[in-house]
Image (cartoon, rainbow, N blue to C red; front, side):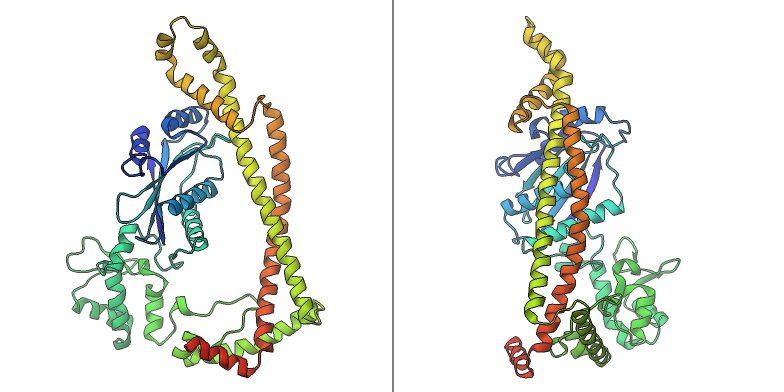
Length: 447
């Protein structure tokens, strides 16, 4: 499980980069990487990019921290996940320095990225939407690497410290949730629950939102921040005998959904009402499955497998080409950045080479010389020698973007179709299995 948080850097950018690159924290700088810049000169390169922005904003950069569960990930794997996270959420348009710290019990990544894009010189806008994109991407990458993830909607907005406090049994929010869960069965109304919480020592604050504060707790906790099961409406419904919102069956908007294994479903074992709903749902979905097969003129199991295989292959092919285009686009963006720097600073560098007193010249133009040499080094690494024209790069980027848009439509369409066919196939597998096979599966599950 990885927990993320981000904050702006308004000053001392170099000090922040030096801190995250500390050799004692990064295994002798083995766990230091950079994109679009060099870690040693990142502050200078950030400033050069920012100089060309129309809307510079007030931030020099942003600092993203990604912390992992202790003992769940190796430093190398954490570093790889951090690199994937940075490249995805920043789209290959912002310089960044990534380091992985191993000096604490939990491995954690530090990513400092420029507040201005080197691709279009636009300022990075941080808001709830951008943060939740970071959170979702981090959770997905953790899942892909076999790590635990935070349940959506359950721990919204928690810091790493809050997660650890809850796991250690010291979180005020966790204790309040446990107290509410314990008291609900003995209460007949929401007001009665609040009175019971007061008897347990909680201070209640009324207003637009109901808030509670435990003894020795510094700030009040709004009930709505505990999760969807703890809003005033949800608690009232739970007192009346309703199901928790997080456990209510999701509607599928008329699409075919997967048949429910009632015998092995925990919700069905705990709720007779859910069992009744599940039986009716299974009948409906079985009929929808048969109608789907008829509408798509699928007469045999082999045809169903062939159609699913063809869709899966088409989806994966489109996805692979999209990733290839994104990689090439990011490479071209880097070439364009370094080529622009190279052209602008070459006259100064030529003066430096011709200067009789290079040390004196360097004292007045140190940052420009560093930037030029870094740009020349990166262009050579990228194979951009001789230097391509800006028009040629822009033309290739435009062609790549047009192809990517076409592929995205194809990918999204085939992905949705493949998911639907996968559901149909799973339903057919269940419907075709004999009662004896189902009983054997249940027995194996219990054992």
